Structures are given as C-alpha cells and as structure tokens.
Length: 325
Image (cartoon, rainbow, N blue to C red; front, side, top):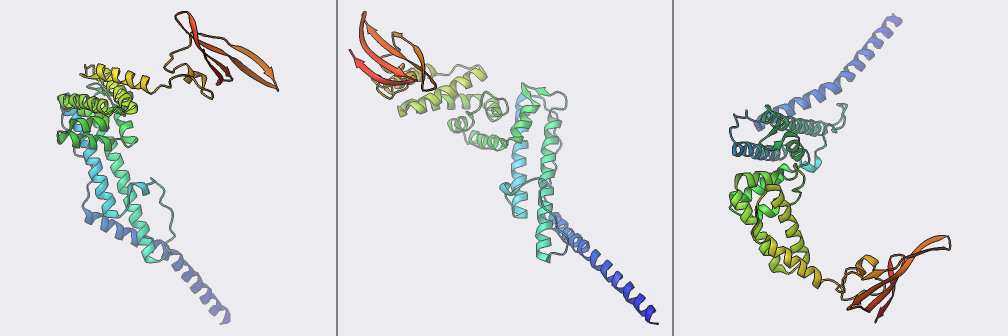
C-alpha cells in the first residue's frame, strides 16, 4: 500500500512538472497571439503595389520617387503604431523570453517582435520593388540597379523625398542645395538625378542662384564650395552654368586676399610657398643626420627684377628664420 501511494505521488509530481514546463511556452504563445491581433487592427499594408509598364525616363524616375515616398510613409506608420523609432531598429536582435516573465513584459516583447517583423517585411518589399523596376535590365535610362539599391541601403531615400518636396514647392535653389553633395557617386547622386531629370530648368536655375548667393557672401569657404558643386553638376549633366566663370574669379580673388602677406617664422614650408609673394624663385635643400634622426633643411629665395627681395631658412618643413632684403 505504501509503495502504491509513493508511486502515485511520483506520477503526480512528474505531471505537475510537465504542466509547469509547458506553462511558459503557452503564455508566450498567448502574448504573440495578442500581438498578432494588434498588428491586424493597424491595417498597415507592407506590400508595394505592382509596378506598371515604364515607358519613359520621366515615368521611371517618378516610380523610384514613389517607392521612396511609400517606404518613408509606411515606415513612419509602422513605427508610430508600435511605438518605436528608427534608432531602435536592429534586425533580428530582439532577445529571448522563456514565457515565465510577467504578462506585461511578455506582451511588450511580442509587440516588439511583431514590429521588427513588419520592418523586415517592408525592407523585403522595397527590395522587391527595385528588383521589379529593373526586371528587364540592370541599367535603365542611364540608371543602374545597384546604385538605387545602395541609395536605399545607405538611407538616402529620405533625401529623395526632401529634395522632391522642395521641387514640388518650386524651390529650385533649396532643392539643389539639398542634393548637390556627392554627385561623383551614382548612388548618392540619385536624389539630384531624379530632381534634375524631372525638373531640369528649375534645378539649373537653383544651381545658378546658389552660385550668385555664395558670391554675395564674400566668404571663401562658401564660394569654394559653391564652385566645386557647380562644376560637378555641370560635368554630370553636361550643362553650361551661367555665373560659374564669375564665381571662379571671385574664388581666386578671395583666395589671394586670404593669403598671408609674406612667410613668417613657424609657418610650414608649403604655406610659405603660397603667400602673396608667390612661389619662391629658387630653393636649396640639404640633408643631415644627428641625434639619431634624419633632418632636411635649406633656404628659399624670392627675386624681383633680378634682385633678391626675400629669403627664409627652413628646417624639417618649418620656417625658422626670415630675411626681408
């Protein structure tokens, strides 16, 4: 009798342990069901509509812009619905729960898990849309599929939307300023490619207005930056830009005005070569070794009308003595 009772107790303990072991997964499953129900209530659709036949470059560029708009709007909708931000999104890094945590913690975990799933589905949908867009060829209307993919992967789709909002407002200079950086790389030039491809006159006028605005500042950095961007813009789209030559002359004038009058002690050799005296007429160079170190030293001379007017001595790349002769 005693052995029978002990056997029953052992069976009961095993059954209880089995029930407890199953209890955690059941609670986690329930939390996930609640998250599924919440996700369904949001009504968010993470599949991009089928792309229609693209019959022109303008339609092709517009489609890329529409994908970028849809991605941004849908991503914002997902984040707002689930209560998370882009900074918190780390694909596949959600963590693990056993199911024995409290109900609120399990529900929060399941909601975050569902949010990450939605974001992953959105990413797949965008990539599929790009793939479909370039279904016939990896290069269409001078645009390369990999460049569009990189633009998306490097989070530059947002710039497309920024630039095109300015374009829609008729703000050519603002749109140009937003898009003018990175024109040497196809992926980073995509916002400008779309803006210029759809509204060339507006963007060209914006470039010319940006040059004029920079000239008025009399700031060397602003003028130099504006000239550099305009030259890249001109080279990429093979256009002539009114005011570019004037801006270049302004850059030269400001560069000269910002130069030191003459070389001075402590100045680097390279800077001493670019003062208002101009480059030296002649330079001597010697090398020596002492205190277990190699040294380079010498003199630079400036002549005018056959006569020496200035001399400096340099040591290891730095001016140590000056002689105004």
